[in-house]
View 1 (cartoon, rainbow, N blue to C red):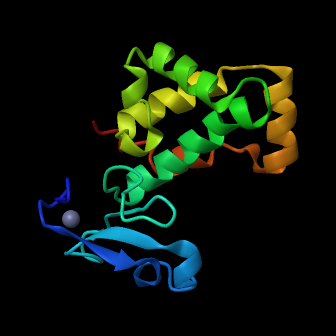
View 2: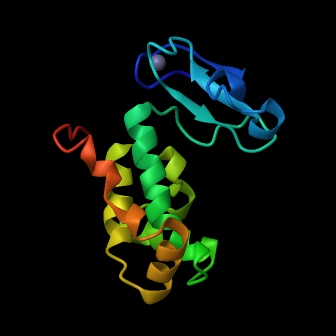
Length: 153
Ligand SMILES: [Zn+2]
C-alpha cells in the first residue's frame, strides 16, 4: 500500500509505534507511511487483522473522519435504525453504491458531506443519544475550528 500524500510505501507496524500509550495486544496494528512522522499519515487495522480500516489518513483527514463518525454513528447507535439501514441511508444520500460507503475510505470532502447530512437530522432519538453520549457542552463544532480557511479538495 502506498501513501496517498507522499507516494512512499506504507509499512505494517505495531500500534505502539503511533500510540505510545497503547498496549499492543489491545490496539493491534497500523499501516504507517515510511516517511512518518515527517509525513503524518497512517491508518489502523480491523481488530485482530492486518486489514486496514480504510485509506491512509493525514491529521486533517483523521480529524474529519472522527467527526464524520461522531455525527453519523448516533443515527444507528441510538437505535433509530440498524447499522445496515443507516449505511444504506447514507449511501443513498451520498449517491454512491452501498459497497463504497465506508467512512474509512472517504476523503475530506466526502467526510464533510457526511457531517453536513447527519447534522441536519434533527430527530429526537438521535438528539437524546447525542446529548447523553457527547453532552451538550461538547456539542461545539470542534472540527471546523482549525480548518475554516483551508478548504481543499
Ligand atoms: Zn506519506
